[in-house]
Amino acid sequence: MNLTIPSTLFQKYSETFTAVLIDYFPKLIAALLLLIIGIWVIRFINAVARKVMIKREVEPTLIEFLSDIIFWGLRIVLFVAVISKLGVESSSFLAILGAAGLALGLSLQGSLANFAGGILIILFKPFKLGDTIEAQGSVGKVIDIQIFVTQILTENNEVVFIPNGILSNGKIVNYSNKPLQRTNLTIRISYQTNINEVKKIILDVVNTMPQVQKNPKPEVFVRELTDAGIHLAIQVWTKNEDNQDVCAMILENCKVAFDEKKINLQHA
Image (cartoon, helix red, strand yellow):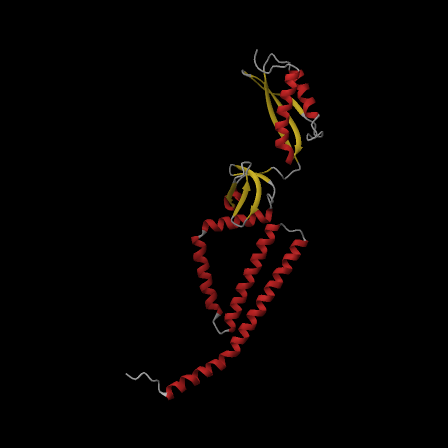
């Protein structure tokens, strides 16, 4: 069987290929130059945008998010421009891209809710990195704010991932939003115990602690009378970072002071 291609046919194909190449080569060069220059311009714009946002002290998480939006948005525009330069009909491509985006959006509704929640958190800033918050039954320090989830570190060194969708629509308690925090403690004493003496001892203890703020001043008062005894409320103001230590120190120092005064808090 003879598989030899006739020389006239080969010459014809060669001439056709050469003609197409000559006709298409300028478009290819132009598209390649546009791609190279476009990539450089995108990097330059992204770097300038980052510097401007850093100079204006924009939230680091917002800087990362906006940088990604600018980077990928400009890349999509560059891609459409390059394929248009090559002669591909861009309107048809955009229609296909839009249909694919709609289908993807319908299949990822939950993720889109988290995405929207992440944008709301970044823009309205109910909390920031390093804040101690309570949300969705967890209390901890915010260690990362991503576009889909927020990570908090609990006292037990556990990392909790909370989806931004439910986080942005739920109740958030920010313990770091104000510089001072009120500490609330309760001590139960018996009805036989001298209330005034116990209150004086407690106030003497808290007033000698440097972590306790003098303004607003500490308070000790009767919160409740029950069958089991009298509930005394202790309210002091501290800096956020001192709150837990102060709670433990007040209870310990009060116990020592009660022992020194030989005051028994239990029923006789």
